[in-house]
Image (tube, rainbow, N blue to C red; front, side, top):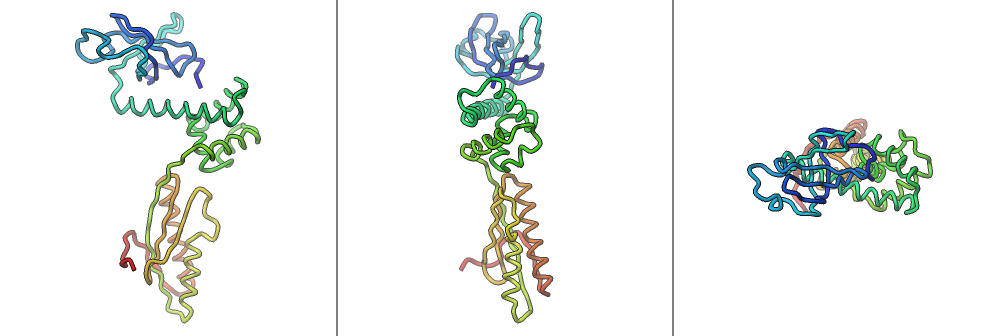
Length: 266
């Protein structure tokens, strides 16, 4: 998606080198419709520049910082040298992600989707999530619930979720902990089984979370959680251990949660 307006001063933009002159470099702004900027020779690189072409070539994709925008003269002043390697890498990745999201929008609504619908749906995603890509990512993880606070229609939500779940590779975080479960009762085995079922969530674990409770060696049990982010994974791990503790305590037993494994592999 290309923006129809103008970039803001201080913003990082992605552009393609269109023309090189002795006084500077003209750059087509790839994220903005029909917008072009100029990188003065002094802003191409640090130090004295003998030949601009030693630093950039026509068709190079560059990340620039916006120095100044004059809408009346339709001039955008840019700098390449004021963008560090980390900023450049992050901005290029962000731009590539939005290109992916553009393609996903076409998959969701068809190549003949109207400009009005494309802009309206894209606007909702950007307003809610900061970018179209982030919107697709959240739709892949959380399904229709992720889009509840938007003004998208039910059909639009369904199309976005279906496309997201088919195309978005969601990064997952894995965390592991251990809980020791003991019961003094004659039917202590059943008490432990009940505690393990409680730890597993009894079907109440969120769809985007994968939680597995396995036997390691008496009295130790492993709780393994996969979730879209570290905070969620940690939260679900702690909740699982707490459920096991509550269940075994109710039966008169004990539970102890710890991070590192204590028993040896069988």
